[in-house]
Length: 214
Image (cartoon, rainbow, N blue to C red; front, side, top):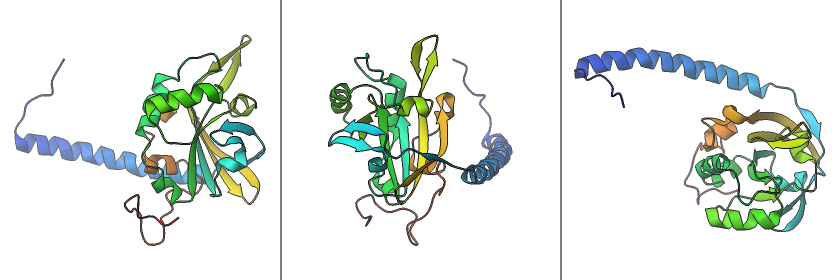
């Protein structure tokens, strides 16, 4: 393994300041890109997609849990697999306490094609509390390009899709797949993918997760 060059504190500070200017440029570009993402048009989605979860059957509208936005993690777990994808598991491990999303009127759920009878023990094994649903009896994964057809086979790919609710109408606002998930998983990164962005709660941007009133 090649280690970084050893320099004096003054040399390190000069190199750090040069890199900081580049980091600031990237940050500003990311903010511009985020604003452009929030201006994307949206397309209406069928609110009646049927899923199976811990409380039985649920529609896409149900996954919102009454909130305005929904972030769905397309977790790769094909019906014939014994366990979920390790890369998707690592992504879900990074998702923090959902209170911070929920306080910003945003719900989160994982969705896979595996039957719920396989999802449930794997979820328990991993120790996750996030809502997780099976889409095995609907075209949800295919319609949102998390499952692709190739030569008669169905190929899974990881992704995140964002939805916005207007009363009983549901709209698809954004999706990202594969390498586009790099750097995602935190509350702020997930909110940056949504149409409403990092909307603060009143005058508070963040609270302890047990202090939110939502």
